[in-house]
Image (cartoon, rainbow, N blue to C red; front, side, top):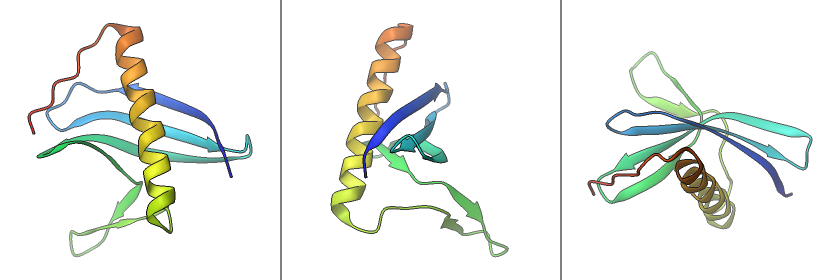
Length: 94
């Protein structure tokens, strides 16, 4: 399976830096990934929903570390590219 499109919508919030939609094989879209500025730098949060007890559960997520690394690397690269194209500046406080 190949990531064929990544759409980044920049946000200028303290922790939330972007919403991201990714397309696999030009056939399947996953919406609602987030680029988060965490304590140790940027990471990608998978789409999730809030449970009645206040915790969050991923709706879609990779099933192994290799897939997670691939998605995170590609999404963060697309985020950096979007920053460059729009002239925005990334600031990491981690």
